[in-house]
Length: 317
Image (cartoon, rainbow, N blue to C red; front, side, top):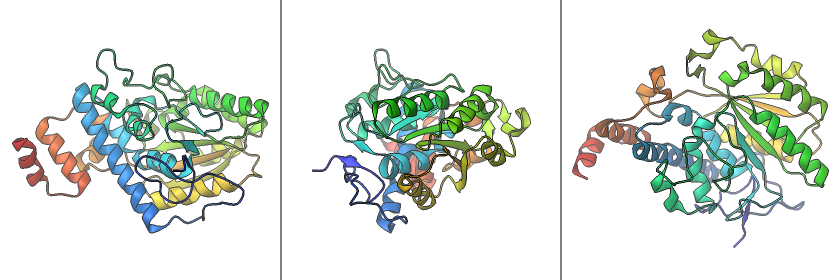
């Protein structure tokens, strides 16, 4: 069974796919089967987020839901990885500035065989390595310990430069929250990346419009965001962050462009709490906990089922 996945045919549920060779380049447009697979994986992220937060009794629902399609597209279409080999030297790297969304990443790392899936069942419990924020010293598959906002892009650039020194070329993807754009270190890293012609560095801004203290542009305005990244010497793309077909097409195009010398910034327009209506409408779900009946209704909405039947089913369990 092949063990390396890249942009191309939808991998099987365990994450196995095709090997990237000069002879194989994924078509730019994903197939309907690939799109359906990515949508299913995004649902999986949301459902597992709800399940794991039920164990912890508190967690970051809405911040994770806004990037579920980004997680799915990166890990099941864009990134070059090997099942069961989290330390493979030529793997693509993924870093999160918004480390509080790690609850949605852990199920994908387990799916890739980077650690036993049983660890998910003890999320945040004493002695379990899976915490509210990712720790690269404890969780196989985590490339950067995050939670202190603003450092991930600098670390990502360091990985690009390290790979260059070792004669390896892998892509480095760095997901940033839009509130993180208020951190000065982000822009220092952006300036340095352009100077270093880090063409295999891809920043992804989860532009969901909110941060812990409220609307991003009320706390400190960051627009015109695309123009700012361009002014710092980056190639900029704006995309619907919940459209897996558009995301896959864009990431494939970036993957296949081996001549790009500018780092690339993807501004993903997203909705905080995407998938659960009241979370989309209420900003307070940055951190919270669902009562059992609300959990059942949220799961039903994500699955496209009548909420009433799901609540009854949940009560019967």
